[in-house]
Length: 336
Image: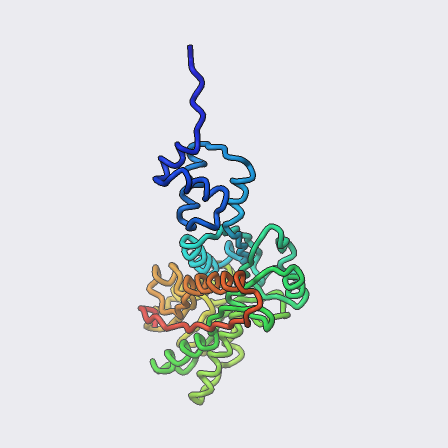
């Protein structure tokens, strides 16, 4: 005769988790009285053993871990994914569950953004990554009393973590000028909406400022915009380079567009950096693979810092807003 399997008890959970029975009971019934690591270990063992405590106890234990939503264009931009990686790494050491919501790129998606903003009953906090916000969305977040922090964008009514894009543009312009380049060009990501200033335009502003500070200027015909698509951007880059007075250097607003410039240069028989210097932005894996000179952003750090600020906001929602600005740096490789 086959005997039914023995019912798992709280003693089995305690033995597997390496804690006392009373600790298991506290973790399930009074989760605030044990450490986050202990609570997570007890819950993991409970799941592995299929232990079924009283429903009220397990619900209390799981509610003690705060749930944070992270929304951004993660499928569209490697930079946004690196920020998300920083958030997830930071979250591993804290009592927080992260729920990720992918949003279309603001460069191609019409307003309103964040139309599917989760209700506050499902989330304890919200991180908004690389998405511009209008006042209607801001009012909705505040009305929901949902603690929120912006990353790679800012608004006067919310805490934020940004990286100085204009400073990055200046780094690119100064580097090319120091190398002796006089005819400079720019290739940026085209936008379908004009309701906000995208990173590419902020980087262009810094680039232009560096040129002006050195008595130079950026000709309008050498400023081009292209979709963030390798094939389409390569066509635009080829038009830029196939000019009677072609530029000697190009600053692109991200590494993918810089890769398109390099491809177009090779199609035209131009060597990089012999005939053309190229600088990208973000320092993604593309830049590393192409040995591309680029402007590096502390992407993972910005994500981790955003989560830190949000956790503070969740604990003390009436604290003053925090505005953190991080600095980019130039990574000099083989394309300049």
